[in-house]
Amino acid sequence: MISQLTPIFGSKTKAQEILFLLNDAKEVVRQGFYEAELPKVELFCKDNHLFLIKSKFKVLLEDKDKVFSNKGIRIDENDPRSGMFFIYLSKDEQKALFASYAELTNNHSELGRLLGYPACCIEFFCQMFNENNTNLELPLTNPWTNLSLREKDAVLLSHFPCSSECGESINLAQKYFDIIRKADAERAKELVISMNLSTATQ
Ligand SMILES: [Zn+2]
Image (cartoon, rainbow, N blue to C red):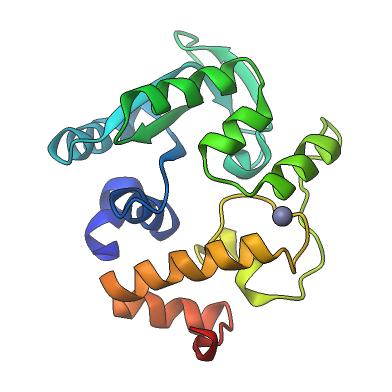
């Protein structure tokens, strides 16, 4: 499953999120794509009855952490510079539209709520995030909430946990892992090894 979705969405992490969406573990998913990457994604969404809303702006790439940090310079969608569009995917058109509007208006808490992040982590983000503090990654104590391997395509969460031991984040990560395990045993095994997860807690 993950291996089929990965060529369309560009990474295993992005493919996982689509799996969570299709399994109703997430109501809205937000991902960044360049223009040339969009046709494949749009076709998949059409075939799978997912609504896709594209941001009215592009974001110039400063770092690859956009999806986590919301950081980046917004430019007009017609600007000739190469920027990344955000897309909001959902089975519910209204929720995808609300998410795009929340982002456009910098309403971090509403966006986080629509993306299914725990309230404690949304509050943490809103208090801590600013232009000079865009990476809210905290010291790692619990492997389930580990974000440090996201560049290596091994991560379960798409938000900054308020603490590595945040119970709601751990529950979410385990719920997501369970979906992956049922859909794609090989990917699950890969994550257990790379993230040092203990499946004994399952
Ligand atoms: Zn939390």
